[in-house]
Length: 304
Length: 319
Image (cartoon, rainbow over all chains, first blue to last red; front, top):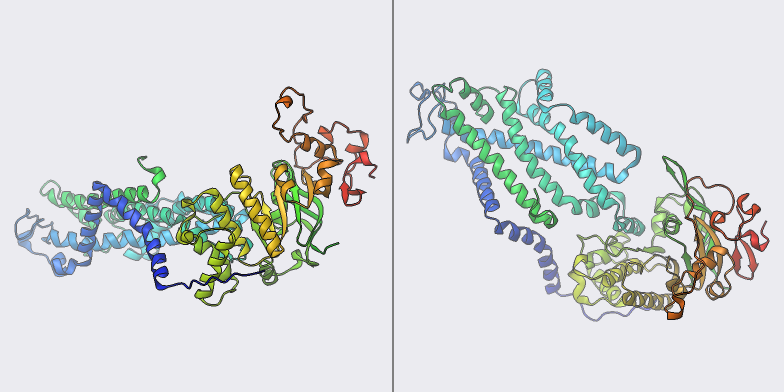
């Protein structure tokens, strides 16, 4: 074969051009999100909450969240204690701020575990197919039928109450549910001819999964993960509310609500403020997830 | 006579379905000479694409052999097969699904070079990609474009560049132009013929479009329900078709002439019989206007009727 050598050598500007081109996808998403006020508002709330989680110790010392002050017992909000006190005289503001750490840890921890496992199981089931796919998915079906609450109780009975146990209890059924979604998305990609082209070139299976399949479903995985995070936080709070979460003195939103519930008649603000925080968190994550989905997949825009 | 590059011997590919065994490719024997083009024609669902994919081991074969330069592909281990992939490539039908939508033109074309470590430095890869783009007629400015930004013809050129990147000897073309506009079809076909000439490529050209196959092939094999029913040099097949199915196919080519409008054409009746657990005998017998008793008793073999002209039909005295 005769090769005509190109005289033009690549220059640094070419490399820069390549990089610029790659950024556009992220930028497109950003442009899309920026247009939607609601999504932007949700994003701001999420960022504020994340800052709260990160800077909790600077806002108010952890000491405040566990110290009991008899004068603060069921106190109404005041300037000094913006959210008042709980039944044991602990500062509610400090408890909510520090409690967000547990809630976010639960939410994101379970999400990361569930999404990673689900991506692995879902992608491998769709790619390998056949009997492996069938057995794995039937197994996932079985797991889905176990309610997270029941699982959490079982795990708590076996391994005691604690945050790691709770994360595991939440992520197991979630893994099953999400791996089915990811499997169907990957199935769509696997059926396309560029996967066969990759095989014909001689690209290894792992390479095909990571370089050809995952990049094509990463948007969906991100959207799923965002939605999961909100659900997981709610689930975490619910299990905490049932006493299956953090051990007693730890500030945790579910636990705070449970404590406050007993004194609802005398001091409703404990439950109200905590619920407000939980609701705003879950809602803004959900709205952001919706916005992200619209931005990543313009075909679904406007629906749902 | 030129050298045979690729040969299929009794190649079979069956699929297990809940309703029985689907005979997608059934006892196919064919050979492709170096530097020539073998066209495979047949209607949709006759197993043309499955044949192509089985030859490349993209699908595991049921039985049979595929010899490439005399070496059996089905006896090779992973490593040997990986090396073989450099020699044989495939161009796909659908230029929309055959390219990864998340990869730029540059990434798609350079990937095979990286996988097979053909170019050592990124500079070399850059040069090779540019060269390939030039060969297939893609302007350099498309280097960083994504497939969705391009039209069908350009996308197909990317697919061709990807197949050429490893400098293969043999390319399976799986209906490479059937998804394109007629004007673009001609461009792509001409490109492929030019490439064949300059690089001494060998094609297995799968299509259902007889006018395309006539244009590009040196030899044509007609496939019906997983079997080859007739094989002949291109001109001979069009001039002297033997098998009733081939005759019917040739008659079905539309002729753009006014006086043909009212003429009655002998169109085949009936439908393609099911490829699942087919009955013994000629697959075409249920639709064949000339079928007689022997046709439904045993499979006819592919026999040489006249030099280089093979046909599998009892009408020509096959046993």
